[in-house]
Image (cartoon, rainbow over the protein chains, first blue to last red):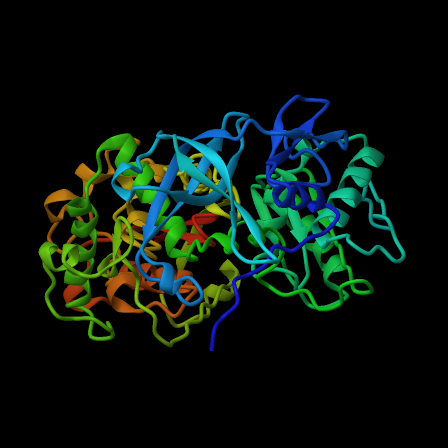
Length: 132
Length: 377
């Protein structure tokens, strides 16, 4: 029996983000009061509690803040092992969990990466990153 | 009417009410929190204690604190049903009376009409789960990788911790794993999530524990020698490790400092240390965060079996979560062992003349820490 990949949970906090991903755009929040960027999407700014948060398209550029190579995991990820999951620090100063595509040997902390959009199936597209 | 004034309710507000399709429990609590703080004329930076209750996350306070950007020094998710929030006010009163904090935020949120069956693995976890980050090990692995990158810490140094802990377990007849262990065996055990091997991970077994706390008055009629709670500190800094402010520093930096200040003890006065060892890296980060060594020096600190029986830093003397037992929420066993050490009941593994113990629990994925300083007369 195949186990389904966990699907994003779309709500009014994050609808814009997930719609962006579907359209191959990485869209994050920006606080119009304190000027900081925000990810994951929230109702208010976790830095200053302002409700004036807007959406911007991120540059897609970032660096690997940390990563792990996953050798053991339960289905549906079991068949993909080993694979690299990383925390990517985007140029805008926010962190996002994602996969790193490309040669495992070249994956290093601080390595520059760029967003790519990975079509998992007809229902799901995810923002992955590639070494640049 | 009594004239003593200890705590007052200074802000109240509702979130949006009604039928709110597409809303979630975090945003409703954020909305209410913002409005209640506005009502009081306070900001989020005034909040020192965080209270919530609900069945919408495994650790509601961790997720809500992360969402709100609040790092509390007192936290309580007592859930006794619909009456929880009256108890939260009462628990806030207790904390204020004890001088632990000045301002508490109590929130509630529910989407019972539009989304009546929230699942524990939803909400903010859905920004990570589709990518296949294994929980909890993947989080700890990324902290270990970052520590290695910043400070040159090695897998051998992490293995030192597993080996020393096993030596303590060999002196504890209740321990699950009592066969001798070598550093090579740890390094050659299967890789689970780089850089963590199987033997960098705690056990999974069944078990339970209990602790009785008494007032000084009641302690006088107990048949044991009292082990006093001298100090306490707690905090949480994030829910998911991706949001952890610094992957190499845990909340123990704050909770440990507060516990030691409350107890009025210095590092040199502590005789025995029991810290949560979910993974070897947890121990290393905790020792640094508690200030037993400087940031980045944890690898050297644990080298040469310094924390093993006979070493000069007795640590996790029951054999820890790594070798003694780990049923999932190990923190209670840290307290049990510290009390036994201070009562001098530990036989072969007794730390000689132990008068003061430090206990540090870590919860979530390096998310929460709670530190106790215990002592005997």
